[in-house]
Length: 609
Image (cartoon, rainbow, N blue to C red):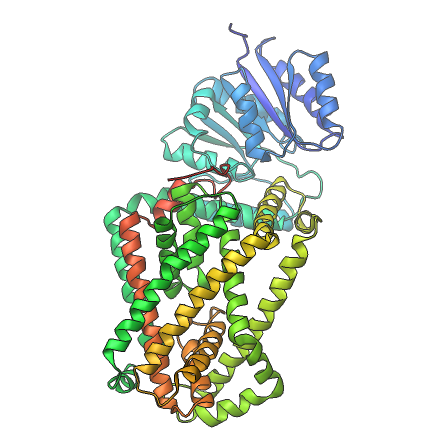
């Protein structure tokens, strides 16, 4: 049945007990001045308030049938609350504005009529139109101008003001746009306007008189993290993603391979490397590569065990490919950004939420660090604390081509620091796994009280809880720990075979023992993202320890270190490219399939093929 309502005004409200009743009364009175009786309604979209706002809204809805109250137990965010109310609104003209009434209400008729008469599909008030610039203090005006400038630059919007809380749109425009608007918080306003322009809808911007209310300030979580990431996400989806095809993705994979190989020559002297490698036994080198390749299914199996503890069952082949792809990315991208690629892959292909994807990576990294710390880091700490590392560097590095004494000392110091940090991190995780305190939420909400901060706190809580789930389960801890030992044992065997390829005069037990120590410390040295793939740091640490603890010359130790790292990187890159082709995975497709930045986190399924 037709309700006769033509205009629906939605007031998004969070803890507005002091102002909500006055705002609703003012809105009803203003609408009654230019609209027929019975043709409008006011909806209070109450977003998980913890004050008296719900009680006041309920009472007003009971007293006046033109008022409706939509309650949410959970924080939906500004955009989520608006969409929830718009979907249930009766009118064909949908209006919303901020409950502080910062925009002069004499503009409400123009806002409504722009859409109601068909003059525009979307209408928005503007505080920055030429000739009608709002008088805003610098702490509010400067960030607002900068934000709107970035939106116009990156998202090619023609509007002056995207965040003015004074907008209207037709029911048809809402139905056309809302499924594509991914943000559920403050960026919702901007995304709605940008997508409306891209869809060819008529967007009318008109100047309004606006007076700031309260003492609003820049919110670190909402404005920097939320709004900034929103601009980047929408720019990627609208401007970058449509231009990247499967051919481009394959080409990017090939380019990544070339870059990874080129970086090796950037950090090392190619001529010195070739001279040291001439006498190596190629059969043993090939065997080393084959042994290292065997470690990759173990990496996939370990990752499968971690995800299984978090409620996700995945196939070994898929997970091994995902690990290959992420590790290939780490050879190219700085700051181990390749780890993020894996989170994208498992989200895009299997619907595993981002917090769980990153938490599973964190668990994997913790076990890697714990394993190599146990294998070699503890001994190294003794070297550094007693000052023995300095004497080792001085004695060895001067005769090793390509190794600077200062960088060698940095490599050993970094490795020792990482070992100490690993031990502290494991202790912290074990302790936190036994606590139920909500420290994450207290810290985040202490910085910001915005609904976006509440969302961020929830994401971080899920991340921490996932890490603790594996750390607190003794059976899982043992399984993942044994898997980590097997993986790093094969890594060491690879290095020992490469060292043996140089016909070194060492007995097998000594060779294996030194290999475990050198490989462990070398990997600790490259944990920090001081060079792509740790190239340079690994060689420095490996060379110093092999040459310092055995009769092997510095030149031979350096050649073995370079060849060992090169074999491992070549296997990684080859496996990464094959995996990208086999799984048809690219960063672009992953981002494209996860619109909203992971806000839609599906529940774990018992089994996924």
